[in-house]
Amino acid sequence: MNFIDLFAGAGGLSEGFIRAGFEPIAHVEMDEAACNTLLTRTVYHHVKNEPDFAKYISYIKGEDLTRDGLYNLLPEEKRHSVINLPIGDDTNDQIFKQIDQLKGNQNVDLIIGGPPCQAYSVIGRGGALRKKKNDERKTLYIHYGRYLKRYQPKVFVFENVPGILVADGGQYFRNLKKYYRQLGYIVEAEILNAKDFGVVQNRRRVIIIGWRKELQLEYPKFNTHPNRYTRNDIFNDLPHIKPGENKRYHSYALPTNEYLSSSEIRNGINFVTQHIARPHNRKDLNIYRLAIEQLEDGIRLKNNKIPDNMRTQANVKDFVDRFKVVADEPHTMIAHIAKDGHHFIHPDKNQLRSISVREAARIQSFPDDYFFEGVKEDQYRTAAFRQIGNAVPPLMAVQIAHKLRNLLQNGRTN
Image 1 (cartoon, rainbow, N blue to C red):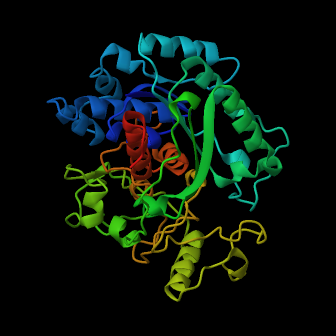
Image 2: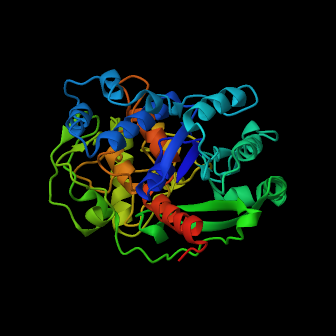
Image 3: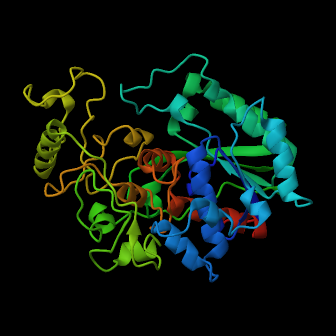
């Protein structure tokens, strides 16, 4: 079975569906760096059981293969399967044309995707996001619907933040359901938490699932379970690094553990890439130390409780959790980590830094062989953080995908 991924980002949702046996026809994404990440991961899946896998390993280690050389390992159609365009009135026809060429005579089984969620988010630097009254991102469900209308998939998955259900007093979601029903779909939504799917992160998301009326299906019943793993299970095998350290790859400090193996975060390679942390100034590091010490005593440091002689911002009213240590159950990863690391402080005072790109990726359950790209080959840290913060955790996505595969094959979900 196949799928089209809209608003694909770094490919977290897609990764889950590929692991469950689905084949991507196309990924559509407006961010150039994320498109590079998608293409690099496409190479991984294309060569992982082939001799050319050694070339992929060489590339992510930063050895002799260039990015163009890596992409030349793909057949022509796969090199064009990542469509770097924004979805909208000006571009949909162009995207349709490219998808039509890629899919040929195939029917589309699924459309998946998560339109940008900032317009509905209550997490922001200033508390509740300052929403524009006519934020254009609120119309993206209409464009998503145009792809449903054109390709008529059996099922679709639309991922977003819980705020989408109550935006504009709930009218937004009512309009979405009405529109998709007019297109021939039964639409249901549930709020799911990634931590119930084995992800070591408290991350609540709305998963909207629709299916063709004539299929007479039902919303999947997920076998969720409490997560018994913690931050230490995903951090403890990584070597200690310093702020600003930029080594291309490291050997693991410890053997794998139960969680890293069962989640497939560690899945065969004997090194870890992108374990790099941003540099920090001394004033911020003093606050980091204070935040770690207070968390050791069970207290979360609030911005308005930082001593005056240590404070680095005058505004102490907005975003009082500005400085936050990653606790045993990590809090929700957000794209703001691309701007600074204050909201994701590493818990080890001996390292005294914000978390690395790889640690952020592990919180989101990305495997260690997943390589996040920038626009330029050697400048990826900021772009990687942004992509990771926006992503759907692959470990959550794969369980959704397995349920939907059963649903499509057997007409049931268990």
